[in-house]
Image (cartoon, rainbow, N blue to C red; front, side):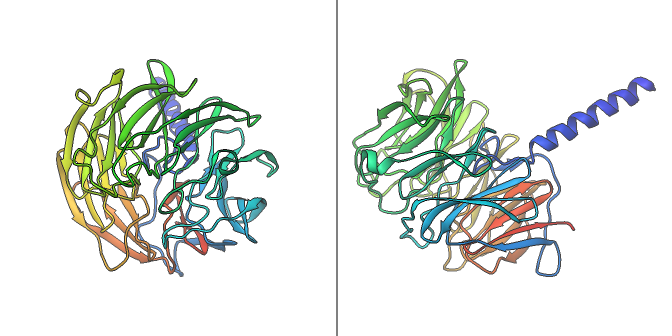
Length: 418
C-alpha cells in the first residue's frame, strides 16, 4: 500500500513537471515542432462574456505567432514604424518593448513585416523581420546583437512577404534565405552574432520554385544536429556544424509546374518527414536518414489529397492533420499516408492561412477573417464551435497553461476557464 502511494506521488510529480515544461511554447509550432500539446484543458467556446481572460491592443499590424517562455509572452509587431519585440506577462501586461530598424510592411493581404515568429531555447530571444533585420535580445529587453541580412548579402526577391522563422541549434541561430536570387543558409553564433558558416543553396527550378517560405527543422542525424530544409523543389538535410549537405530528396515537381513555392513547412513523425507540396495538392512521407541523393529510396508514400498549401499540418500519435486553404481537413496515418477521416470547415471568400493547433483532443483552426473553428480530432469529425474573433487572424493559436493565445491583426487575446 505504501509502495503504491509512493508510486502515485512520483507519477503525479513527474506529470506536473512535464505539464510545467509543456506550458512553454518556444517557437511557432511548439516544443516538438508539431503544432500540438499533450497536456492541458482548453475551452471549446468563448465570447465577450465568458472565458476571455484578457484582450490587449498591439501597436501595429503583424502576423507572427507569439511564443511563451517561463510565463512570459513574446510577440513581434511594428511599433511607430520600426520592427519591434514585445514582452508581456501572463496577464497581458507589457514588461518591455524593444525596437530595431525601420519596418518593411507586408504587401500580401495575409502578410506583414512581422511574419516570422520569435524563437528561444532559454538563452535570449531571436527575431527576424521582412526588413532583413535579425537580432538576439536578452530577457530584459536589451539587444545582445543585431544585423541585417539584406544589407550584407542583397535584397530578398520573393513575390510575397518573408515567412520563415529562425531555427536554433545548440550554438547558432540559422536563417534560410530561399528566393529568386542567390539562395543560402547562414548560421550566426547565438552569443556574439559572428557568422559561423554560410552555404549556397541554389537549384534550377520552374518559375517561383526557388522561392520558399518554410522554416528549417533541427533534428538529430547519426547522433549529431542537422537542419531539415524545404525549398528549391527539394528537401535537404544539412550539417549543423558547417551547413554541408548530408542528403537530398527531389522529385516534388516532376512536371515542372510553375508557381509551386512551398509555404507550409515539413513536420516530423518519428522517422518520417511529412511534406506538403504542389499548392495544396500533394502530401509526401519522406524517410529520414541515408546519405547523398535519396530521391529514389526514401519516398515512402505520396498522396494526392486536399493537402496544405499555407497551413503547416499538426502531428500527434501517428496521425497528421492537414488543413487546406479552403478549410478541408484530412487526417492521415503518418506511417502509410492512408486517409483516416476528412471534414469540411465553413467557407466563404476568406482562406485559412493560420496553421492548426491540436490540443485537448480538439483542433483549433482560424480563418483569415477571424472565424475560429473548434473541431473534434478523435476520428468522428464534428465542428464543436465557431467563434468570430472580430478581426483578421493569420497567426496560429498558442496553448499555454490551459489557456489559448489568439493573435489577431490588432489585438492579442487570452481565452480559458476563469
